[in-house]
Image (cartoon, rainbow, N blue to C red):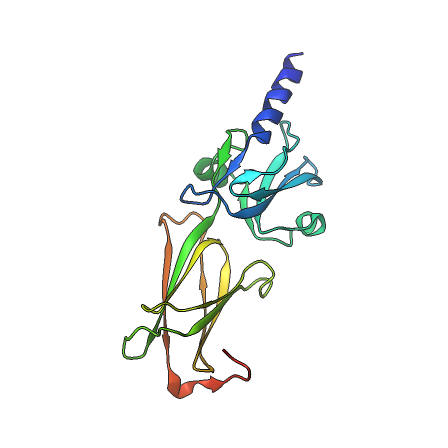
Length: 207
């Protein structure tokens, strides 16, 4: 009876789980999955606005993982996702929270990319495409124009490697990459990209 009550308590705790980003803001969306001791997928549910849609089964020995984006059971089972929380990793438990604690944070951060011309002037009105490098855009694929200060801002982005293309006046003016690291002490990530029109290549049908 004692073990049954403990298991019931853990199940309730998992069902009430809130999911946040690194800065403790509700995670916009994601996929939460539970795996058994053999590594097999037991159940999954989706996350919207920082809350799981459905409760997940739980018992000692289970592992909770959270993936960025809305993933299919096949993608989750195969690990073809960007994990932003994993209770099998001690660092995740220590820094992000216990899966039975009612709330966890994740390795998702706000990101700012500032695009400047070679002379230092902000490149306003250009376009940036940001994609995750691992899948070339399956999980992150953002196309956005630069603001008056030359910046683009991502409200939440998972810790992974990124590729960036900058288009100005119909030209591909910069192509680079950056990384967001797990466990970074910063509250946000900031990058600066310098464009050079002299070495630009015209791109057909570019914005």
